[in-house]
Image (cartoon, rainbow, N blue to C red):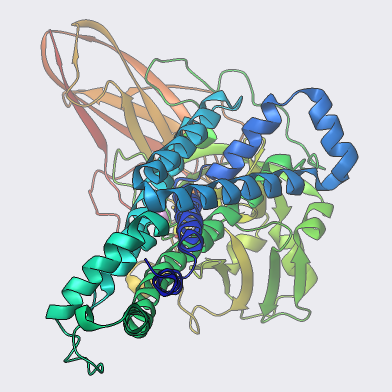
Length: 579
Ligand SMILES: Nc1nc2c(c(=O)[nH]1)N[C@H]1C(S)=C(S)[C@@H](COP(=O)(O)O)O[C@H]1N2
Ligand SMILES: [Mo]
């Protein structure tokens, strides 16, 4: 083979190893980007973080000390930089090797993934789901490598008279292949497009080595440009996917910083703490929900597709509209105010008779009436229109906020900062009103206005403007259609009439006489109350019914109405079979 042939080979595929390295980097980048995205979506740590954490967790203390000595507080950045650099270096080498032996690349990536999966399993914290982003990333990385390698390979296939020359080079083996390919190029060149391509002198076989070299170089330049374009286009596409998925993943993950802040929060104690709950709020009937609803069990109702994660450091509340002095508060300023505790049951207007869209807890928060008085509410401003971070609106009667009940900006429930799903960092709670007119989660804006002038979210959709919670009772035990043993049978449930309190709960079986149920203790009138009764049942089918009377003397009506527009009514009944 002539020197010119060698020249052609070299110029035709510019630094194939470099292309391989780039392919390797891009594949690894895709793996990391998609891993980041999957982690963001799954709410788990990203693969790089998992690997970094595993390294930190499992490195000897002298290494940690050294790292801290060398990098100080930048030790985490140094560690991640190290992880990224190692991945970059290894993937570039792998990519270069994969040119000749694609399998090396695929297996290499799989080994990366296995290392990531191992990191997940050796991590001390229990986060098995973190393996999902590792696998997703690995799959995406393999796919990217496949695309990139095949774009390089296609590049290398004969594309013209001397296209064959590039085949071996493209795989990074210029010396072994150039001779054979040169011959192939010469042969095919003689019978194909050489004439048509307008090259002087006709077919290669009749040319001198020098001529052959020149022609090949000319054709090679065209093929080279095309090949480069193809590889660049594929590479750009892969890069875009990697960057976009990584960016989106990061965006989702940004909420995790807020989770850390929430976890680290130490809320001040209440300036006016309530006494502990009285003994006997729980009747200890199996199957009866506890008096205090555990936060994770608290019903959740909102219009948010993804739970907003509001950074407490960026949270602001504006109180404005029909007021003398608009107020603006940040989270610290809110927490500097006197906090009160309030035992209040929340209820959703959509709750059906017997439904479970109610929960009871001890809230911690700042009195809203104080704030409104400081702002100086204009007369005629009959609506407190609150808006959440995500744009949901809620209209609360001003008089309900100002009449002395525990209308609060709540920051905690059941001794814990509000869970994200329940409005972290700040929500409204106004006892006695259904949630849609009182309980704005992630509240950021409160405007004093008139019901005549502004309609809140659900009011625009046919629900009531004002919606005090209706007196309600529910049977929780036994469950509907349960089969129980004949004989002594416990019936139990909860009842609520926030702002009035429950005076009596009555229960009856099979339409018999109403019997007064036993009532549990309560700390106040704004919670629910547990009740229970005993019946001696014969075998057969039985129907229990319950009704409550509140402290205003009102007894629940048997008239069934649907939740819309202002809450369901009617007696709850449960059928069972005893054997
Ligand atoms: N931001 C916001 N707050 C909201 C809602 C909403 O959709 N968005 N729904 C309200 C309704 S209808 C109810 S019943 C209560 C439920 O509160 P919870 O999810 O903490 O139980 O939140 C209220 N606050
Ligand atoms: Mo609701």
